[in-house]
Image (tube, rainbow, N blue to C red; front, top):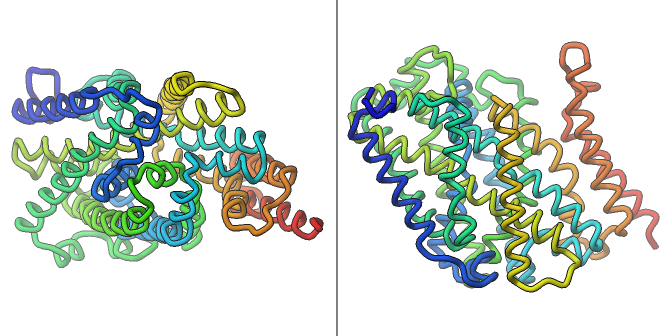
Length: 462
């Protein structure tokens, strides 16, 4: 421990981490966004590499959740947080990406506006605001800074939030993308260095097989099949994830979007290989630990030399922070533009102020959730279980339906499916054995309601 107040770190590590933080802030604050187009969609000028790197960084923020899950369940990490998301990202790339970019609509609520009217568009924006709030990522960043510094969790949470959102109000998406170019490189370099060091010192697959429980090398990781399969439904939120819509609209050309998402899937697969391998090494080398959420940083602290520890910790910080800035900005746009400003005659500067106000409210709301929560995976599960049933079917029918549902049916589906999923989620609190009603996962109950309402509407429509 150094005299600087940081624990687990040498002076060299602290100096390198402060340098990294300074570079990030300098890049983010360097150039303001002077127009609404620059602020919201980077003037539609994202090149292929920028599109890929920003998308990869933004969508992979849950690194301490991955630390916890891969340490606890091993290879199942790839089958839960990897494979299902690749599938839906591929579906988006093949069937939605060109439609989204060609339409030049700025958001999913814009599509709801055309298909179902203003009420549905505002409701969609409100749900996306709740979905995009990165409370789980703020929780992770706060826990990581607490681990590194020894500060209290709440001080760490506030400082991490300021570090990862300050520049949003000045540069918008343009600032975010510039920062992601650096964070992308740091993410991959940090994990690659750790894995190379461990493989050279201890060996590869044979070492892991000999030192971890055998069930950790199975697709379920010792869980039930149902516990794994439910994530394949939750992953369907990818099809309504505003991140994909925003980046598709910011690309220089629609010809960039499809190959860009395919390249991103490859990048995510590589990164998932590295994180899953790191989790297995952590289980093999650290044995039983009290806080699996810190398995990754603990592994680096014990097995990397000074200086390289900082590189790995910077990779963790970059992974989390790159999702926080993206989703705070998305939540701000959803609330500010798609709820507050929708249907009002406003100039670009007024819309920009609404988006900034929405981002500020998103920060406060996400902070409130992270302040009182202690489960990363629990937050992911709860949010995904409610938002997927509410938006999935109405969204797909808005894009693909030759005859979209009537606005009244779409609204009823959104309200009722979300409400049923929420009540079903809460049912475990008062049921015997903390089980959901009838043993059915909330996401399935909500989707059943949504599908039933929309099917009846199709039968009744002339």
